[in-house]
Image 1 (cartoon, rainbow, N blue to C red):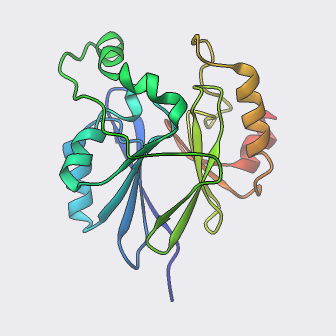
Image 2 (spheres, helix red, strand yellow; image 1 turned 45 degrees about the vertical axis):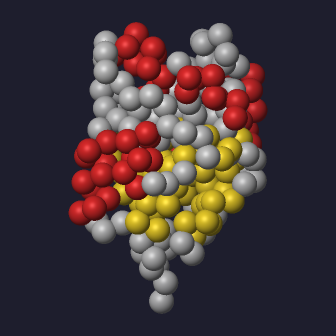
Length: 211
């Protein structure tokens, strides 16, 4: 009997970002979501678990979600995907890391091999992950959703405790973020939200406490 998608959470970097390893237990094919930092740690976990990375994906282009992407891309020779509208943020990754964290030595951004567009499907072994465009925090923010396991990887769209992603940046939009939240609320109530920072929670918990 085939098992469902397996999820490992790694907390990385000064911004305490959640990097997710999603893998098919039958093939060990693995999708790495938001490799924010600590590439050596992520590589070690992948090897210790005998996982086989096939994709890198970013929920959005902020530096704290992609700083380890190039090293992982080179280590495993795998493609990196992001929404096209956040390319400008990727290009500023090194400067942003220096500004916010004081980090002087930051790898360049990874090479982009494909784009995450609405309804696009990523095949991870026998598992299928659907892309949902959820702009607001950034123009190209996306969520990754697996219907079978009712799992949503939401980046910085919303967090446990009711918080949402910042919209005070010049490129952000609180109106778009509210529309994105409404679109997510149509998912099943027992969907588990895995955010870019902090603990996971169910959609029903979010609705009951904050909507």
